[in-house]
Length: 295
Image (cartoon, one colour):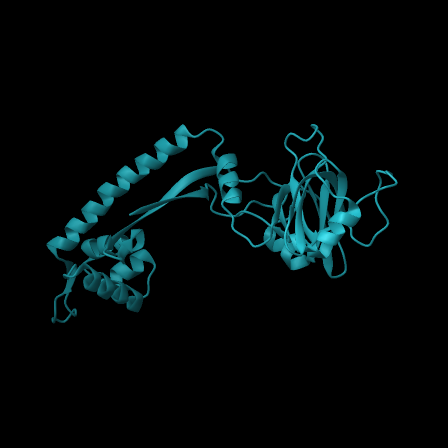
């Protein structure tokens, strides 16, 4: 069985301020029997080292394992395979030797052959996909599952350090922005620097809807830091509450406008006269925003 994945071609993280390492398609390969995994590249490397050295001690050293870990791996492989792959000859002043059975030798060759074909597949798949890194990042975002109704993607436009927390602004497609407050540790662990891609999660129940009857078009004087202007696109009433969706004002006229959804009472919908096509403002606190990134 094999697994393909996205990996960086650089072994270490890029230095601050430097360009990120290019992304490429990578993969891993392992052998299974029924529902159990016999081993992957590491265990096959151990078998190969045993073949070359004739010694558990030498093989363990060659693959960077402890002697105990090597024997544990051998026992596991023998048990899962249902037959011996490795046998240890007793006795002698040197303590005997360790050899592979014909089945163990064949397993190495089988793995190497499949590994070569898997590598060719990865190379062909990588060459066939244009803008692979961009597409893969998008696949990761759209496949994300979360209880937060609002999932907004953007780019970090500013990071302001405070005494305890940081204030991070995320520029959304279309020109508006979301501000989040989070700890220094979270900012650093997520790699939130200017220009980095991130997504914001906001529960629908945390969003307040406001109608600016004065038509000022500016920032309203309320404690909620985030005030996103848009147009109501849908109102779905329930027994007590209603779900109201708002397409945010967008620089291109709204064709690709992000949508924010709020859950408010039916009484609020009536009082604010919220209906499809009516302008409104989605407001929520910076502390209500959860930021995340795709690794």
